[in-house]
Structures are given as C-alpha cells and as structure tokens.
Image (tube, rainbow, N blue to C red; front, side, top):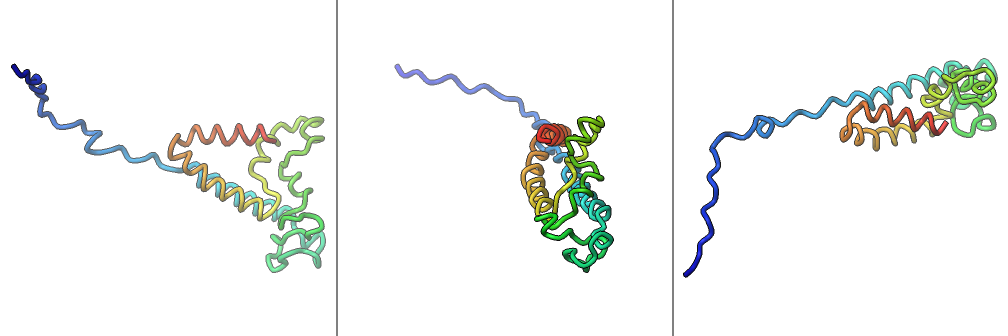
Length: 154
C-alpha cells in the first residue's frame, strides 16, 4: 500500500502586512553632507585666518585667490595654511592642550586640514565610506563613531 503525504495546511487568505506592500523609506541622510560642509567652511575660515598676502605677499601660491591664497611650499608642502593659523583655529598642539588645559582641541582638530590635498582625501573617504555606513547603521552611530575615532587618533 502506498502512503500519500498529508495535505498541506490551509493558510488564511488575509493580505500581507502593510510593511510588505509599502516598505519604509530609507532614513534621510543628513550627517555626511553636514560633515562635508563643516570641513569646507572651516577650511575656508582657516585660509582666511592665515591671510598669506599680509605675511608674505610675493611668495604665496595661487595669489589670484587673494586672502585665501596658500602658504609657500617651503612652509607647507600641502597647498594650505601655515601651522600657526591651524593652531589659532584649534589644531592639536601638545603644549597648549596639556599645560593650558585646552581639552576642546581634541574635538576641533577633527575638522581642520593642513591643505587642499588633505581636505580632498578626507572628503573622498567621508563620501565613499561614511555615506555607506550612514545608510546601513544610521546617523547617530556614525556620528559617535566618527567623533570617537577622531578624538582617539588625536
């Protein structure tokens, strides 16, 4: 005698849940564009603070930029501002952060860049990697990760 398998269970004919029909839209990506804008604005402010034409008017690179022109290659091998301007803007400087208790420098140095090449490489990494991570894990976790890794590296 041949035994047949039992008949399949009957399922109700209810429509699937609304989440299946209408998937949730992805969360808005706001953190990475904010990081990019903050880095660009602070680079321009650092170049404004640098003011190369007032220090060495005939040796500035890209002098057509006026007050935003770069320091000579002998002072900064990356086209950018002088180290003194970076320290004024809040770059990590051991003597000031240790002796004068400038703990804010741990945070402000995350947003400063030595030059255009440094800025472009950082923006590429932020746009390529962090944008993917923000889509995957959300803005809050990426903000915490970005801040903690930057403070740890400084």
